[in-house]
Amino acid sequence: MKTLALSIPKDRKKVIIPLLLLPVWILIYFNLDSSIKYFVYSIINLPLENKFSDAVFFFIFESIKVLLLLVIVIFFISIIRSYFSPEKTRKFLEGKPLFAGNVLASMLGIVTPFCSCSAVPLFVGFVEAGIPLGITFSFLIAAPMINEVAVVLLFGLFGWQTALIYTGSGLIIAISAGYIIGKLKLNRFVEEWVYEVKSIKQNSVDEKISFAERIDYGYTTLKEIVSKVWIYILLGIAVGAGIHGYIPENFMAGIMGKTEWWSVPLSVLIGIPLYSNAAGIIPVMMALIEKGASLGTALAFMMSVIGLSLPEMIILRKVLKLQLIFIFIGVVGVGIIIIGFLFNIIY
Image (cartoon, rainbow, N blue to C red):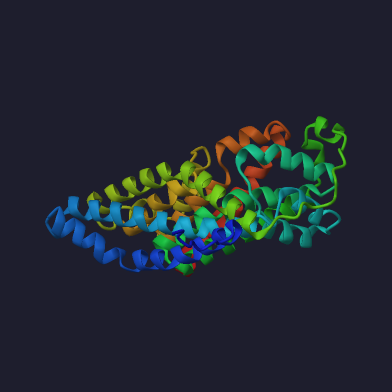
């Protein structure tokens, strides 16, 4: 006797599986605090109110929480991103006036797939299409600085208010820095070969992608991003756990507190030559704030590390002369310092 089996189309399964897994994610996430406390203080029986126990709890809890948030946000953001290819972004920005173009480029930078290695081809493509230099820089500033990993980590570790503050600040810096660079008319500091590249006309017909294929893209991107950042997340949280457990309260107030005027510019100067992505630096930033660093100073430090990373500057040297790279660092650096001072005043 033959058994009857439910025949569900493959494409429909791809849509159904995330919907079935969502309640499981919700159940785990909202019971995480009590579960980790039970594991740390009951199962492995670490003592309460102990520095080592606090560090262990911080590390396990924050690691799992951040990874859970990354999984769900990257998956759904990747599906949205599948509608915004770099080529579509380039075409959309063609012919836009300066300020409006800066705003649109900064917004699109958030949702367009980007990594430091793609900075040169994107820059050449934008310039080749006649997109003004300032608008191009708005995109190049926003794309690495305001990405889903940074927003998820800030949301998970600090709450939605800080995540919103960071996103808004990043947009202000990207828009204003791009606008200033555009007004300065710095095209002469772009390497000559960039303007000599002949444009290759591509087929303007966009490939139609099914929703199931977009879900596949979400799975692929999720696997790719998590495989690249998980070690930075764990290392960053491990450093944060050490600071959380062993550094005395208010220790950082004298170095990165709001009372010292030089704390913000010094943090930016220290951050510029360093290299880390958002996954590595945000947990450290959280621990520094817990130990007395002010929000504005810590935010400025993080933005300088992420937004002015040394590898990206080295890669951009292929298309930009040193004068423009230093102007770029100066304009963005001053913008970050202003943001840091403002948040130290407000908070």
